[in-house]
Length: 533
Image 1 (cartoon, rainbow, N blue to C red):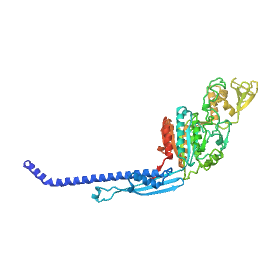
Image 2: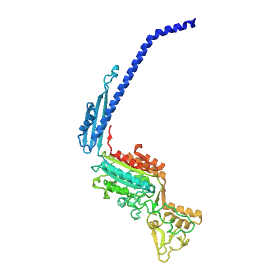
Image 3: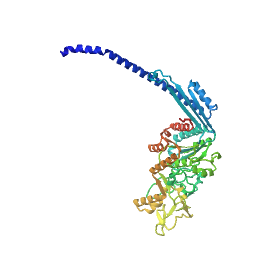
Image 4: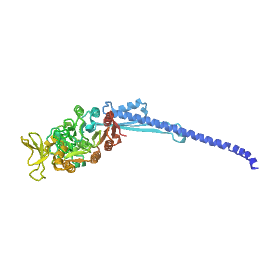
């Protein structure tokens, strides 16, 4: 019975529900129309608001330009009118200063909703506001450029082009002597040049022309300033890096493995790779850039330290005393908290830290225990630790004797400056200490190592990395903006420069001609107009 009656029951149920389903379907359709209408109104609102916002942005930027000669308010109103939005502009405000122009504008547009009034929304106005400012801010810019040996060839050629274009760009926007630019070329050291070097309390002055580097103590990386009173030694004019042959026998002092390699001195003599104090002569600055030469190791920490020093207000007296800073910049470097100054560093490297070597006190200058015979030029050295009388080792004879070697024309006791001018450090350590004081391979090497330890100190790259980041952080803490460029640098150098930069957007990883793009982006970033809201 149930099966027989089921079709008829279902038929009657369907007929009884026809009216209800029709009403439900109509409600759904009506809701879909309302939702589609709301979407259309919202889209129209956002399109109108975006168009108004973009127009106000463009118009305020145009009006805020300091080289704009028309009245700023007129520029905004004309710009808005040309975009067909005159009736949507509500207000324009202009603030002018001696080196400042601020322009703001507000607008409102009625989007006339087509469907929202169905749910009680009869008005839907789109609001937009924009403000732009351009100010000729006092800018102190320090270019810290890697001129180490790995920059030789195409890389330094690309750097010169990029840096020269950068100089042209930043100075083109400076019409009122508001921009000063300094430069710190660095390799394994920073050559200050004789005039700037004379402003510091240096010791161990070797007197070698064009070699004007200072060995910075670790304490120099504890602050942004550089003491002009603390005693700091000049970097010795010595080749402590090049190796020598540790042969059991004698090697002549004129041998290739005995004489210094000028490329391996920590402070190569130069009149081009020297610090340039703040100035505003782009022609002279570009001439020096184009004269840079690639030589030496890489000490980014020293380069940045001197770059920050040229921005530090404590350096003002020393810089002024050189007579090399234009009179218009006599009050620079400005205080860090001066609201009208922007301090910027552009730090560039193609490498990573190379362990520093610095000659120790007692071996940079002063009298050495080494004599040279005037006749044949051969050496002898007195080791006072040996029992008298035979305290003089004569390398070319391989013997000890009671007096300095004299070929018949007299002898001269040399200064350490004279020794290092003629011989590399490792040669002296081996021929005059290792061979003299050792009796077999082990004792000779021990004596050699002891001599090298006495002669010079090495700084680990991890320490140099830490010093670099310390001075980076202190500079950024004083609101110094740091742009970093890693130019075909290894991973270690990239990491150090990226960490030092003020933000990821201030860091550039460049190869080949991309270095020009990096410098150009930085120049435009420095000079461009920026929206303030």
